[in-house]
Length: 487
Image (cartoon, rainbow, N blue to C red; front, side, top):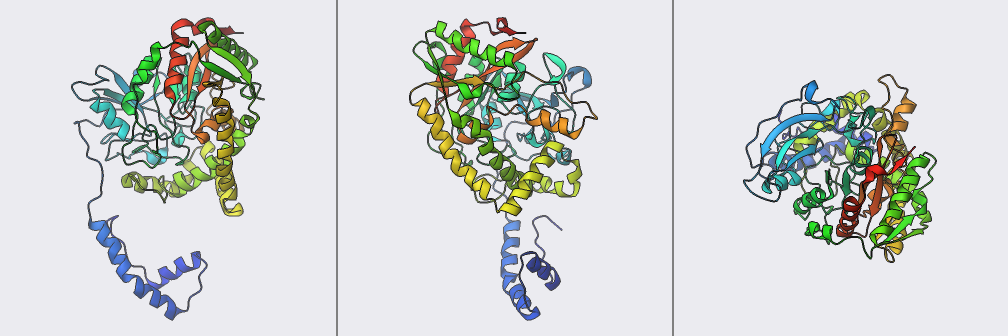
């Protein structure tokens, strides 16, 4: 039977549905309900016979290939491709790798999950189309954490991903986390600035996608290509128009007012050397003629507790129980992904421990506490956002460590669950908040501890990525971050 064919339930099957919903019917009443639903099932089958409404796929491509071990020493590559875009454009001559939660039609997508192995998307994500239209070459897809639900680069079904500075250490997952661990520039744009269309979702209000690059200029260039509305993503709302971000790179840091957030330092898991290097790096902005002052935002320390119900309950309901897409929004649903992903239920034991842990919490809180903590957390996001905005009314940027630590050792293959979970979530103390509040935030390298990079995070007002780029470029141009070292 086709997936687009709906079978009319027998009376017994409809009775089972009624029992699941807590309904008690007489046999006559149940039969009456079934009879009245016959036209509805025909409407579903009429819908099933219609062609889906999917964006067209341009640019011919091959399915790519798995990299061989000698070209994948760090375990970061999932698929190698050579997909050429337009003959000219801003990205001509640039190679771009996609994280493997992004749909590239005809090329496998695994998103780090064994339960997704074998899935091949039938569409290109909007960011893919924009890269190709701008003349870029897509050189492959990079390994993700299991459904992107870890920051530690050790949960992917394909194996761990190693830090480029040291084999056996974490490379990280997400945007700012790997940027901090690896010593590159990673920007989480304002929520909705870059369309998430065609990227496997986690939770609608937390989903972001953005550029990771070796230089600030390439980061700004890529954002110029990626940003702006596509008409298919409900995450996009007022102010999402792309800007000429590279124009900010030559303006220097003179006159900028930078607030060093005291609560971003001194976390229980923080490495003192990381805190010290970020404070020293912050002070270097004074030499670039910026004003640097320390401020207190007490709510920052409460931000992780606000983020947690949104992430745990929201991801459980949308990404897992909702088969990735859930309900109650208009935009592009990738139905082929939804169908394939739904099979996780018969293979749940394969899920990563970090995802299982999150789902245990999320399902418990939704079913036993009615989802009220998710609801209250979303209400409190507004208070958290105001706390940052009140400071950003007086300052241009907030500054703190991206992560409280440098890259940590990868867990051994037989590591206990408690270590696997610790390594998955221990680094989120400063990053989770801005996923909720939607402020743009960038990690830029600012020093080394024992040869491993330290990340400094700059956050700005909504849709003010230019100021982040302005400060980051000034620091990159004038400060050799590799000379700032901790013991």
